[in-house]
Length: 376
Image 1 (tube, rainbow, N blue to C red):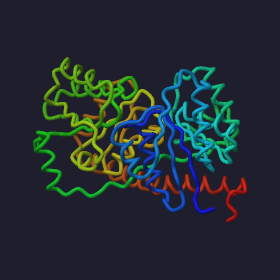
Image 2 (cartoon, rainbow, N blue to C red; image 1 turned 90 degrees about the vertical axis):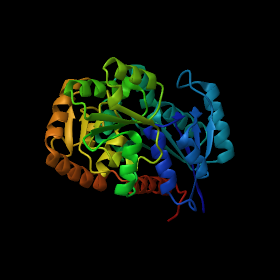
Image 3 (tube, rainbow, N blue to C red; image 1 turned 120 degrees about the horizontal axis):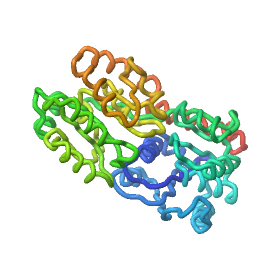
Image 4 (cartoon, rainbow, N blue to C red; image 1 turned 120 degrees about the vertical axis):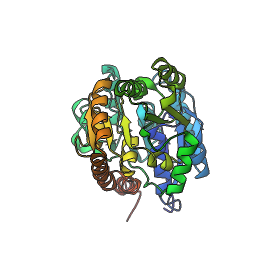
């Protein structure tokens, strides 16, 4: 066999971490050996265009009314019939449902599910269905140790079925001092400013960017600015919160950036205040840029950020706790440097794209060999 065909099943392709990791995987695997297609519920934006630029066909089939919606699964089965994948790899709940049903009925040799979140409010019915879907899977990937624990303890999957593969991010490009200074000038950042960075899809119920704004209000330092990268449905809500707190002049929102390296390089401290988080890709990105990270003690962030070593962990929904740690880092530039170095070392050891792609490829190849699809 000269080409391994992989059918990925996910939900929307927008600006989130799941689709970013899929792009990382597509770029990281040898195009002479692997062919990818992606079934999704909706696609649009820069990541979708990058995937298409990599030669990946995106097939949107619309949103699911419920996980077992037969009309959607029929669409998946049609694609399986024509594409004839060797592997079906489903992530996010809808993607796992597509992989399970399509994998069994479409007789796909290898079925992989991937839990990309750390659910805190998933219903008993949804957990039961996930356990049922997992019976169809050869392996279920957990993207962080806390997610693996959820799969074993809550979904009650056999230990032999679950595998840990930490998410991975690309090593950042080098950004010259001249480019950094030009960006600061463009964004209106002065030499006296301290830049707190954050990034992600603007879905405030999960990402809690308004908690960071409340933190900045509590710290009460006019030289403290929040550089917020991303886009999404709650952009207006975030802007209105800044106005309510009289922080319009301290909030910088340049939108979604496909090249984030120069923005990370002008940050002094990174903050991720999520209510829940499967992994926290942006925390690993920040660590690769040698930034100290203040993160909420939730989901995969508990594994990525080491408290008092690479940054600080704080309770979720607690701007005053964030403010306390933020003030510690503002007052101690040397501590910021030390934590940044420790974070960089940890991220390069555990969270690089190369390591992620290699582990996923190893899983693919081992399962294909078990099924007799590969002889070597």
